[in-house]
Image (cartoon, rainbow, N blue to C red; front, side, top):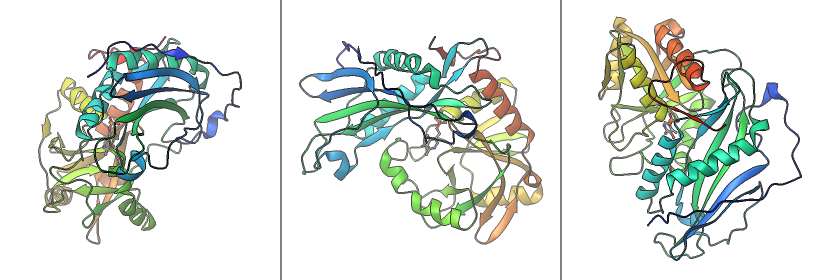
Length: 359
Ligand SMILES: *Cc1c(COP(=O)(O)O)cnc(C)c1O
């Protein structure tokens, strides 16, 4: 049950951190002065909601998150709008997705409207941390963990939800350059019936070995194939994947193993607005390679909050290197990147009502 009343108290801190240099923020290196926290138990529902100084947690070593991994999170951004407003991009979709992840992991759902209000309060309080550089933003990380101290396997009966924020630089500080991608044919990310569509911590723990092995071979990311046949394309790293074949935009369908990306959904809707044919269809790695070789595959790119759009210049599959679009960023990837970034900063009309104003 979601209790409706949620009083958020505010405890501002006077000990403010030194703000980092704006030209070298990186991703997630710096954390701001405040955070939002609230607790859940069966008796009280969500309670003790507080915006307070960023600080450590005190957790029992038997806290269930450490042992059984009930942990879910989200990632979204806040930006300075062109007119000096503070904007967030589709934050309700992130909170809704967090609640879907919560259901899958037997965790309590959060009151989306109240949390959105609290999030706005937090972002406004931290507004001086929102970077102003081109492509820079304040990254927002809502998270929920199981905190009950007990060693038997069952859903925890106590949880902590928190939101922390981090100023991040432009993802492409060295230019919007295509990446080299390793097609992973040994490790898998998610199995049918598993937790692939939940943004749950274990999915990322399970993926780092493949990532580090691919990076040690000189690749940026891995392309995940389906777990049963190692044949159908799923995602690229922690992004969704798109292909342009015969001028149509193709992405794998959401079938339980793929994370339903908000950027993915935005790409599909914008492309449809631009009269581009879009298909959510299973596509095999063999079809992608054949299309690259006969020239019908002209672009491939990933989509996600961190990078927005990430063009792919080359795939490596079973020791063969397959170039995409001559290794250059394609026109649709560029148009989507520019279009979404402009929209996120209030620089063009917002026909889908994606922007939420903080102030
Ligand atoms: C978060 C995430 C995405 C992208 O989702 P966005 O909402 O677009 O940021 C894609 N795949 C995985 C595995 C993810 O964790």
